[in-house]
Length: 306
Image (cartoon, rainbow, N blue to C red):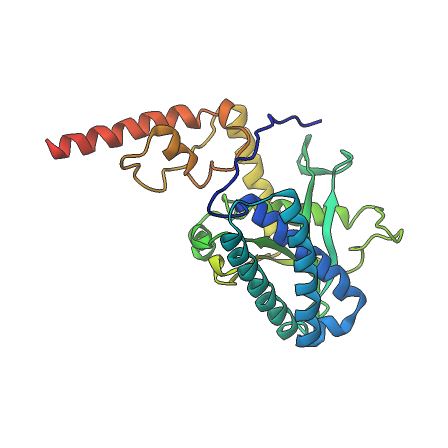
């Protein structure tokens, strides 16, 4: 069981939905949209049908979120709703345009939650994993599968994926790497889906992972990670190295994304993009490191003004 301190949600007087809530809403809409499209091929192929379907789902989901997360400003809530509906429309149009390239076969594909999935990393070395893949597609050319992960933020921190000198396993490839290794392992096992079959058995290897930015903040981009025959061993070697470092007490901290200016230490820490949503801030040495780093930045700025 995982326990987390309950923090009462503060009423936003000028907006509606924080980034995590917005992400959850989009994920729910897209899951329902693709579940419906897998049953009705017209939704995948006809733009009008796709737009109608996703906006109907979006409106129903938004209504429920409005009931669960009341707002103080009808004006800003209406603006947010318009933005969501427009993003959904553009997403649906894009899916119709690309429907001939892949076929979604699973949404919110969960694995390992019963503690039944272990990844072998080497002799006498393994790790247990669990997770949920937003979507799994079968490539139209029959060569294998692709993993899709929805993102509702900006894509600037994902530019490392274009850096050919970056190590195969880094902070932006770790999630798809674990999905990739998990699906390879699951394909070997006798697992069951809702219809009693292994949904990924016999469909080929996982060929690519896609970060799909589904709204204007991410400019609707797709950042693709292509897997090769060497990927499995490269990722396992990266994991072995990472866990060895952790066992030796080496926990790498992220860098500040911007100078704090007149912000307090707490405010600057909260705005560090790699730490903003982490649930382990209170037990992580990051907070101590950032106090030192912020102190150095403030001291240098004060010295410069003297």
